[in-house]
Length: 547
Image 1 (spheres, rainbow, N blue to C red):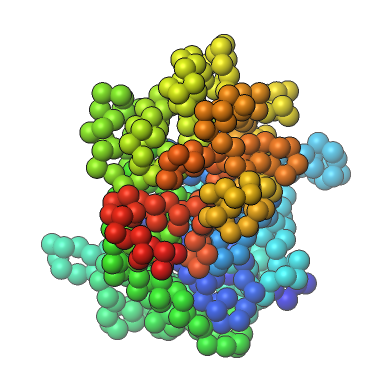
Image 2 (image 1 turned 90 degrees about the vertical axis):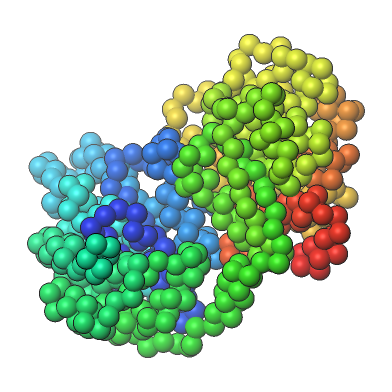
């Protein structure tokens, strides 16, 4: 049996309490205590992965280095721990059932009647232990999606119950996140929802070891004692998680609550060192006390839901802090953006990012935005479809190919400047069939990209089917539109640039997925710097000093 310790994070009362942030914060603190930590997410939906989910359904689809399309919480894990996740770090009910059914079809169960217990729960347990069995980690934190009491969550809770029995209480603990609501009319906090949530969890055979209580107001000793008494946990195992101004404040709040020490005590582990949070505190200090401010437009078609562009939003936070600058991101819906209103919508901005996406809805609005920022010399970064729209815009408005388009939008276009990748032409299935994960890109010597990255070879993550058609490149470069980055093996155009523009860059990959608190992404740092310079050229000296 593996010596790895396992921590399970469950949630009750309501969804969206922040299990991912709590798990990430705990992982950060334990890592700083000297332990090798990873975090995994088990999602109860029947999709095999979130790759085919509409962003309105589930927020952004996060992509790992090895090409897994995963839940957005894995982005939090990486941003907090600064450690890459993999295919193994995200499991769905769909993947569990797919494996069980495939085993049944192959006869692996030797004629048994296949049931939720033990076959499905055994597969859940097997996957829960995979990362621990590698020997790479001291502690594996497992976040269970959904809330206690959901029908779809029951097999996971049963699997945790069995693992607690199999591994023993010092090797496997459960942290339950609940809500302590404040009733304004009564001017008091109410513990009853937490009591009922713990009772529901206990009814399934799982007694939580530690309670983390989301609250707007501080928990008094009396309330903590009441929760401990009626939820059958130690007094020191009731941890408050007050609302914070930033998710990056949460690790420090939990450190003050001695949350990590309570966890280590339950697991019979001794801290290997005191947590060094100096760089994290410095980050927060700059985040909370910026010296500058810029406004950057985020042009996309899912802007009603902030989580649809979660990694982009966070990458702007990281990059802004590098320049002691508050980046105000203004969301602009591309579907309602037209040539007639583009100046009104974008004219006050200091920079523009055109977001990734799929399908034709909102594409013409993105093209209108790019035309405006190109002509007005506003700093621009296009990501994935954003880069492709920049190619289409230049073809139409500079090269004069008025019908130029992507074959995704118009299969019969006379100038298919964006075409389907060769290895995608025979693919009909939608799930996990795109170009996914990290690929190496060579940057053009002397280009703006080389200057930004300070190297000639980079690795970035991808999620796309369509590409710039190289057959049209001579016409583009003759007009000053340059390819400044190419895939090391396939020669696919990865980055484009207008050298006549101070900052006009498009990338086929997703730089936002590699930005973390302690390692902000160079492209976002450069975009913020360019936006500060566009706002006020006098800030150039400050920008260069902080870059």
